[in-house]
Each structure stands twice: as C-alpha cells, then as structure tokens.
Image (cartoon, rainbow, N blue to C red; front, side, top):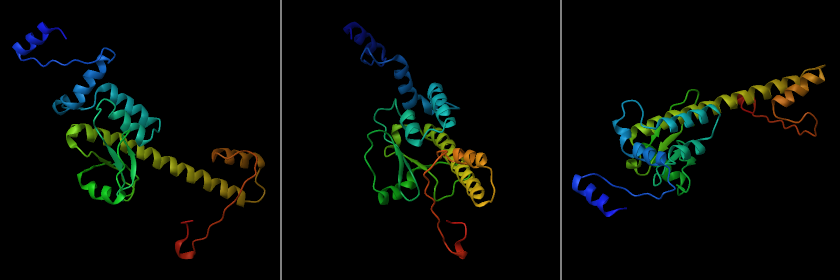
Length: 212
C-alpha cells in the first residue's frame, strides 16, 4: 500500500482496506453489503446475486445445509444453525461446532422461526446465530423465508412419495392388474422394474389405524 495513499486517506478521514490481489471485487462489495449496508436497505438485506442463487436453490429442492452455506459464504466468521423444536441440528454453516440437543432447545428463544405451510409445530425449523451481530436481522428473516420454501418442498416431496406408495400398494392388492401398470407404479416409487423385492407389513392395531 503506497505511503502517500495511506497519508491522504488519513488526512481526509477515509477508510482504507487492503486485500490480497486474488480476491474478487464482487466478494468485497457483497461482504460490506451483508455486514453493514443491509440494515439501510428498505427492501432486501441480501445482495441480488445471493438472493437469486438462493431462490434457484430453493426451487431445485436444495437442502438447508447448502442454503445456509451459500447465504453466509461471504461472512467468514458468521456461524449459523438450523434447529428443530427438540434441539436437533438440521444444518449448520461449514465448520460450526456441534450443539447438544438439550442446549440447542434452550437457545430456540433467541432464534428466528422458519414459517412453512403444511409443517407442524413439532417439525418447524428455527434459524439460530450464536452472535446476532454477525448478520443484519433483515438478512436472517430473508434467509428464513428461503428456508421455509425449502421445507415446504420437502413436505410436498414426502406427500408425493406416500401417494405413489399407496397407489402401488393398491395395485398389488388388486386382482388381475396389468403387468405394465404395476411396472410403471414401481418406477414411480423409484424401485427397479425387476426384483428381488422384500415386502414388509406393519400392524398398529384398530385404535391406531393408518399409522403403520
């Protein structure tokens, strides 16, 4: 860093930072944006490039781990967790230390709840940062919205899996079903067209019908 540049910046009260030459300028601006300017934004705290990437990931069914890692990629010191109401860690930023479930359950009071349609309160995710100053609050709420879309996609995928499994079970129990129809139902369930197969039957009793 040239001495005259340093002296000029000191004289005029301008901040000056030095970074290695291989660091992309976009990475610098995104880091400043996320860490400082996000609070001043009227609409969004996440940079447009990050928001677009997260939106595509949610649409493609990405998991919460990938979403959190992408959102905090430019905040090197930030640590974040996605927790369940029981304290189970669903996802965390790379390198984050594990939190025992009992401790994590207590920390939920400081977390941002993730709203998702079709999700019970017992499954609802929570976004938790040990140091709230690592990211602006608006960014956390935007990220929680993305995570909500991810969880909704998981709920829909599970519902589709159950439906295709029910359809296959009905076909196998019905007499005289065409072999091609059964083969199509097997493929829909992700099963090979030819065996061997193993069929499991579970019974929960008349009072708990349907739980099996």
